[in-house]
Image (cartoon, rainbow, N blue to C red; front, top):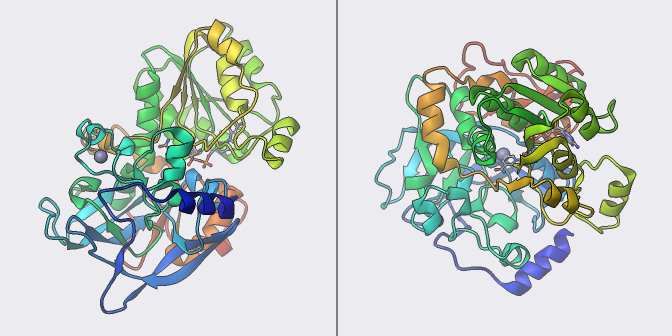
Length: 440
Ligand SMILES: NC(=O)c1ccc[n+]([C@@H]2O[C@H](COP(=O)([O-])OP(=O)(O)OC[C@H]3O[C@@H](n4cnc5c(N)ncnc54)[C@H](O)[C@@H]3O)[C@@H](O)[C@H]2O)c1
Ligand SMILES: [Zn+2]
Ligand SMILES: [Zn+2]
């Protein structure tokens, strides 16, 4: 799939963008550690050139905190098109400003900052509304335009389908349009509480706000990874009367029950999740949010269709949500999907008047200041409750394999570099992935 999609994309050429995805290398030839993709289930820690200011709006960030995301597993499994050997991955990172280009006026060397996973131009009609993930002018992918009609913003470390920008599982990152894509972090907020402003905090918040969770709602959350856990927490803060989480990883179900006090359903034990929900909530859920992962079809039918490349994605969760919500219920899809799914229950969608909402890639810029100032700083939302492990960047390749297997109860990981501070009080201490036991 990668070879064919790369050939197709090369044939189509590149869309014009206001930023250049390729970076210059530091003139002194300095090298850094970074995690690069080489093939399906094959990622490696390599020595790569340190990037330099390439365009006048660039900032170079010295990374002090990075992580792995459920979205990275789609790349690991080769399910996102146009990956190229040597691509540096990672779209969630923070650090200290190392250098700024001459046009950067609001960010200074030495400042602590977090980057948004998307690279927004700051000027287009979407950026003017802070809908940064929908920016019109930073993604070169003609293939995405061909498949979707329009393109998203460019993203850090997320294939050439989103521009081919080098990512943040590295010691240094070049951040294009640094004036808009970096958020300064005040002194009192430790790295562990700031890092997730890059993606999973705004993403989960967006899923709840955009799908329209209201006071009193009964909410179903499919998938209890970091996104699902945060979605459940935001739903509670927005006044949900009941939250039901669905997953099959025993540690994740137990984690959600103990940390958030929500009800759970194990989809390996309950073969018909939607019917089980209707037993628990006979009139149906008010809101359902898909925080799962499309690379794990449950039924033989969809496993076979995926294998035969008759579909790229499975519709199972979408169908369960449509079935389990009340008439006029709301279903949001924040989980990433790539292409086509067969057998969507369009009859139930239509007849029940279900609002099925593609939440899109989350517009981080719309929410990150609000989340920092109104929730993290006053202590209303402590993002570290999902943090289970801390590992060094040198272990990043092993982390992909362990995270994929959800080994050792892993939820979210803080990945440190040689520039990181000591772990903050109450946060996980450094471990090596090779030493993780089943229950580390
Ligand atoms: N839209 C955005 O802006 C955005 C941003 C970040 C992540 N994402 C996506 O959100 C999703 C969740 O991210 P994460 O980091 O929590 O991922 P994760 O892989 O850690 O967690 C996904 C969870 O879903 C569960 N799951 C899989 N199939 C399921 C099913 N059929 N029913 C119920 N649960 C199921 C898995 O067991 C797993 O625990 C991923 O698809 C990711 O790509 C979207
Ligand atoms: Zn992510
Ligand atoms: Zn824009």
